[in-house]
Length: 426
Image 1 (cartoon, rainbow, N blue to C red):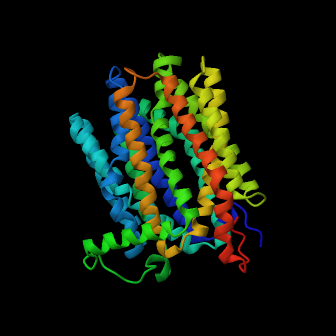
Image 2: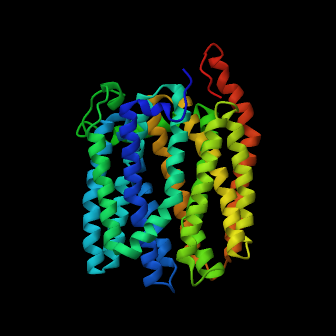
Image 3: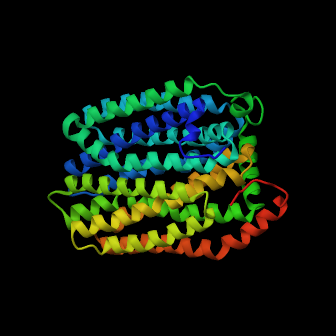
């Protein structure tokens, strides 16, 4: 039977996990957009506050990375995903109180804590999804998740902005809390086989010693270094982290401080719509092409085209030009995300997925944190917004050229032991 993007939704357990992931994203997106606008309104002359908010979202990964992947492989993945949502629900309620008090150090600390807990959700949820799907369904699952991402890109900024305008910061956080609550209830209703929840057998938190955690982490590193193809892909995630760091703040900065100082919030909504439409179109194209072309070809093409578009955005002289190149760039993103999202589960042992993911996330977040720190201290005093866009565009182009040079021969080596396999990995 031909696997399509929507045929995977016939799996009821996957559908529940999928909706839980959507609700969890909703529980993060609206509140973060609203909080960024809140800071830009309250501290408009100090853009560092908006950047610090993004740092609170990225830095926790560097403190918990050695735990998240190991625990996702050793403990009950369903319970980890469930508790991550319950705890974020409680922290969000505390955030409501801190906003009322107006004490920013407490607010930033709670954002930091909530982000740290969130890091445990993704490896556990990814492991559960990998366990309930067939290998040929991974790429279509990635395409479906990319379409959801496009919807959030399409409506996320608009919803966050509308929520901030009409419900205030408190109402936006209430929506966040509801998203985490719904996600937790959906995950609780799922039924998984023991080998999906506990891929390495039954274990308890008390039975896991710190020494064994670092041993598992070291085992995950050795597993990656034994396969140069995995290492090549994982190494590119550092520069993806640089890209994420730039784009968490740069579009708003470009609008507020150059293109639309008086109407940046409204233009930001239009930017979200254009960006979301582009990602939706790109998602449909990437999902349709995923079964017709090699995934690494899609990945390289998306990176090279994306790098060119990013550089052009930085030199936009008016809002229409900005929106045009933002739209073009957004079309390239699904080619990158669908390629990697469908590829990684095919080449990684399910028993090692958590530990590999446990290295990917901190690598990206380290790059994101360094990037945000660089922006905090360099913009606008030492570097211009155009220079920042040229830098991030160059990073994307560098990754594209790097993959173009190394992936083809690494794929040949990776496929050699699998000559007898009928699985169409690439």
